[in-house]
Each structure stands twice: as C-alpha cells, then as structure tokens.
View 1: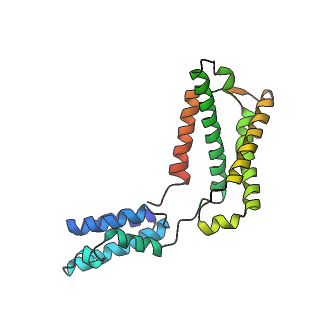
View 2: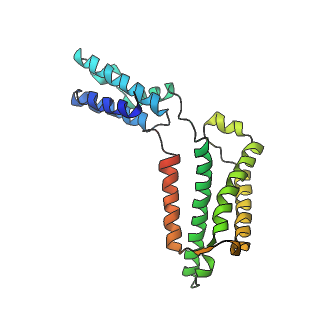
View 3: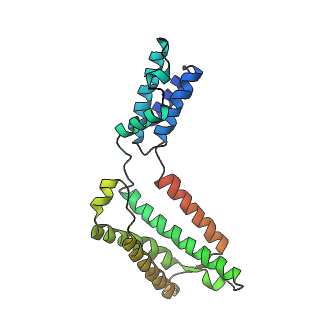
Amino acid sequence: MTTRQMIQENNRLREQMTPANRDFYEDILVHVRDSRANRQQGEERLLELAKEVLAAQKKGKSASKLFGGDAEAYARSVVESLPSAKPVEGTAYYIMIAWTALTILFLIEAVIGFGAQFAGYSSNSLNHISLLTLILVPVGSIVIMEVLMKSLGKSQEHENNKPGINVKAIGIYLIIMVIVVVIGFSLRNMLPVFTIQPWLSLVLCIIGFLGLRFIFLRKSK
C-alpha cells in the first residue's frame, strides 16, 4: 500500500472505534506523525496499531489498557522503534542549498532597503540586483557547502541525521557569500540589473523560508 492508501485505511478504521478508543489512539497518531520517523514505516505501524485497537475493542478491552494508559509514552516508544526520516539528499539537497542562499540574499536586501528608508535615504540605489548575482549566489553556495562539508567532516552529519552548528563553517560561509555578492555587484553591467523594492524582497524572503519549512524540512505526517 502507498502512504496515501494507508492513511485512507487508517481513517476508515478510526471511524469504527469507540469515542474513547479513538481519542486515545489519535493521541498516539499525532505524536508519531509529528515526529521525524520514517513516514512510510510510521504509517505502517499506525495501521497495525489501529487494527490492534479494533481487535481489543471487540473483546471489550480499551485502547488505554492495551497501550499502557499513557498515549504519549507509548507513542515515544513507537517512534524510537522506527528509523528516522532520511535527510534531504541528492538533487533536492542542492536545490535546498541554492534556495537557502537566495532566501538569505533577499533577507539582506529587505533589511538594507527598509533600513535605508527608516534612515531617510532612498533605497533605490541599494536594491539593484544583477542577474549575475542571482546566478552566482546559488551556484557559489553549492560549491562552498560541498567544500565545507568535506573539510569539516561530513560523517558527523550522517551520524546525527542533522547538520551540527559549526561557528567556523558559518563564518567562512558568510564571508564567501559577501565576496560573491560583491563580485556580482561589480560585474552587474555584464547582465541585466533589476530593481527590487524592499517589500518585494521581504515577500520573496518569506516565501523562501516557507518553502524551506514545508518543502525541504517538513516532518513526516
């Protein structure tokens, strides 16, 4: 069964539960789906639990007694028994890096633009973005991250299933990002230059962060 089919089957089985059993089971379901457990295997386990609840229900046994009386504790045990969701990898990994770089770029542009307006200066001259910059920033960020991950030890990321915070890496990344932006600004006449108002930069930045949250960093549900 696909994940969607398992969810639909799960919904169907929940309709057959008594209100008390359904409430207890759904507490487990919410915790499992909101965890970083592998989505496919998480849904398989939830489907198994739903069937166990219905089987016990027919025998007059409640879900609370079946699972020990503590839905959250039982849910944690289920999550611990499941493999974690795989980190973003492959093509999606590189797209995420480029997406993040552009999001940061638009954040910087929005801050500079609104800062200039607040200080009483015109932000038009500060909000010119060259097409070259829009190309260099994502491409440069991918190259930079590849170099950093190799030099700082990519194995640590795989062991923890998430990147650790490394101040040195962040510092190097920011410095190189500034250099890339400066180069793009210096060579802006080579390619078209766009004027992006601060409010538009802010909107693009918000879209970027929402994309990171709900596309690349979403939890299994």
